[in-house]
Length: 115
Image 1 (cartoon, helix red, strand yellow):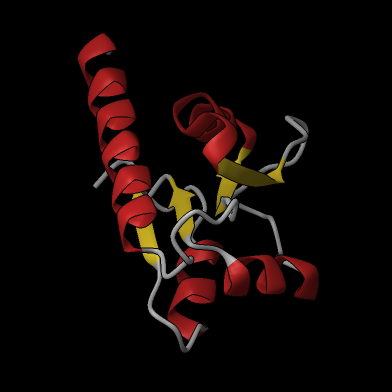
Image 2: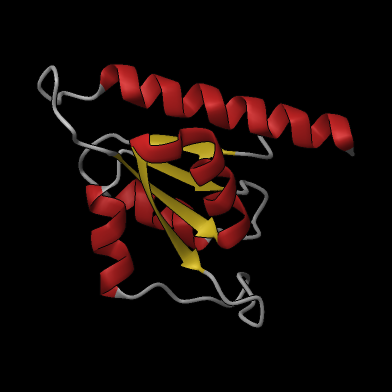
């Protein structure tokens, strides 16, 4: 279990670094990397890894909400559209995010942690 978590965190760190290196922000700009996470756990990890270089929005931040049954709103669609990095489980737990990312016209850095 520990090895899986360590691997997931390492992959997330690499994804955030890849986004940081590939953003088209002007040199010396204070623009933060916009990260959208499906659940609060992944959002907290992204905050811990990215520090003050990221702005993180967790879609589901209430543990009483079941990600299997969640229906995204237009607000969530806008958050995904403006994100530089999207973090999801990737094992059907939050399959609604796959649909949102596929419907987005711009290519995004999409980290599916379980893949």
